[in-house]
Image (cartoon, rainbow, N blue to C red; front, side, top):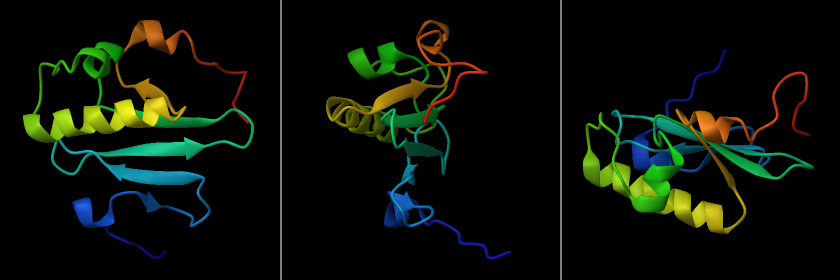
Length: 112
C-alpha cells in the first residue's frame, strides 16, 4: 500500500482520488492535525464532514467556540471557511449536533 502523509496547511484541500469527489481540508483547532472531508456527490450536492472541527451549527452561525479547543485562532479560521463553503451550497455536517443530524438521510436511505 502506498502512503502519502499530508503536511498541514501545505497540503490543505488535498484531492484524495484526484477526481474532485473527496477533498481533505486541514482543520486544526480542536486538535493538532485535524482534518475534515468535503464529499461531492453526483446528485445530492456537496457535504463537509467536519467531525470535531465544528461541534454544532451554533459554532458556525455565532462564531462560538466549543468547550475543548487546543488552538482557538485556527478553530475560528475554520468557522470562517465553513461559512464561506456554506454560502456556495455545501451542506455542513457538524460532529455533535443531534438536531442537525435529524435533517440528513439515514440508512437505508443514502446520498447519490
